[in-house]
Image (cartoon, rainbow, N blue to C red; front, side, top):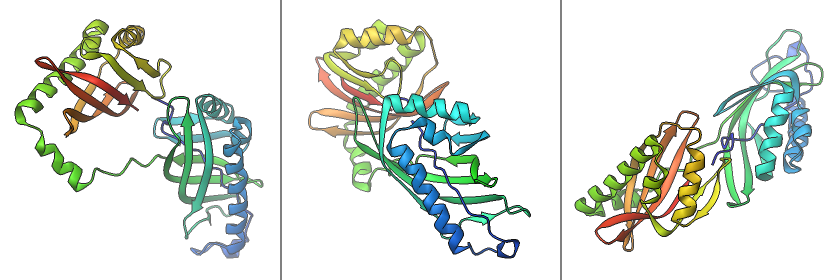
Length: 287
């Protein structure tokens, strides 16, 4: 799954112009109130999933920087959001401003910066609703205070609890070794572009979900999974994947991995079930 998100939310901030005498480390209250008003206008555009309205908050030569990299220019920013809105519905967009923001940074009073946090609810065709959140910083300029540069990120999910971490030690060492061997086979098959070898690691009724990719969505059954990988290998890539956590769920084994390919990275959750003298994938989800 990958949304250039998958990464995610651009936040527009606008301000009134204070006098030069107001250029102190204490934000002007009226400036802050007008900032909040401008934020509301932008979050409304996000809640309406209106790419043109979102892009209208940026200057023609703006830069929007997210975890996947920068997007240059209002036209490209509008396309970024138009593509995003086709795949994911955004709602409940909320922006907060740090107590020490905003601040004027130019002698003519027409450039400023501010920082804060954001959150939103997203829902796709095969996932959600789920909440995402992160932090932002912005530089605005001009009489209408359009965004010249916006930087935002998505905060990772909280680390596993101590109890969950301790569970990793409850997996029998021999079972751990067997599951790790299957994981290694998957990585090797991926890097060889061998769709049949990958599919053979799944049970006949396995379910696999990808999020944010053109080939993404739900694939049910070994044949459907093999077909998906054959299509994916039309554009081969190198997979680097490592196990970060493993623990039992009943008679099955849950494995959490971190993975990286040349154009994106993320996490995957895989459920392995015992089949004869080996372990096979029953369910896999990656973001």
